[in-house]
Length: 152
Image (spheres, helix red, strand yellow):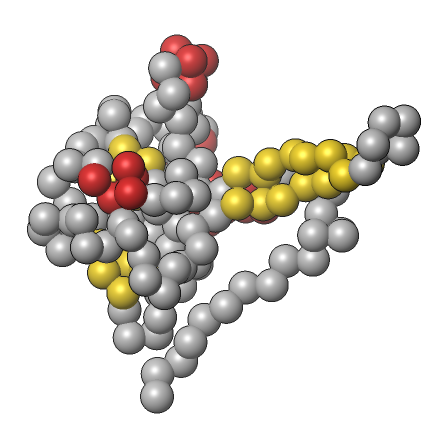
């Protein structure tokens, strides 16, 4: 039997600092969006940190929840892809072959967690940020949908 991956996050220890978001961007060459792109809803976040409240006022406490690809066993994003760019690999991860993706965005629309993102523009890193790119991770081009790779 192949290896099966999993992730455990202690939500009681999450402070909402978004260090995981920054680390994910740096490790996976996730481009940052300018104000104009973000205002149009075109920012890419492989991980986002949601805030919610527990309890009633005045004793309410803020809690944080990191949200990334849940690697669904029966992922709704996979069967809708006409080019089979989205697939489940033998290790149980929902993977994507970016060279196969033609950008239909069906997978992004089918994802119940809203964690697949379409590249509306070619990523550009201003100097000196281009020097921080991870050479082991491809840079996704305009016209493809991208998602969390579970850092594998």
